[in-house]
Length: 216
Image (cartoon, rainbow, N blue to C red; front, top):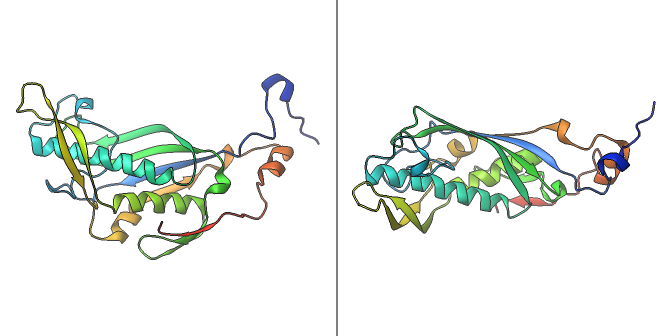
């Protein structure tokens, strides 16, 4: 049997980048929900996304820290590859802004997957051996870092509602193992090129030539 590529009809070319699809899930129950720099967990949501906005500046700052960590997480992943985020699912106890996020899930469609290493050392000192583990490690690194950035923060005590505030987001846990264990990344293998020509050109199934990394 033979497979014939419908290039004329669909514009499919073996020269297309070797994209891969990864699912990411972050269970955040063990992350800090305190009112200090460690609280706020990680979320793409901002205060105005909630049906009931945060009732105090302290609660609003948690939301802003979570959003800042989302930005840090995306920047950490962008150090190696281009990607787009799809299918974001956030889990809260309710749609009120005073509630902490408990789970975050999303998909990553990655271009030029050969740029992703598959061997190295994680933030908790463990060895890794897959591209999915590298992505999890990069997310873990972002959640273990500290950054201060000026942000527009919802302030329920002011008339205009928004203040420009220096927000500091520190590590979501003092235990790097807790951070790393909360992150699960899996590759969706069916997203890879299917035809023989595409697989050959993309290097699917051949020896992985990706670089080694160590807690970049």
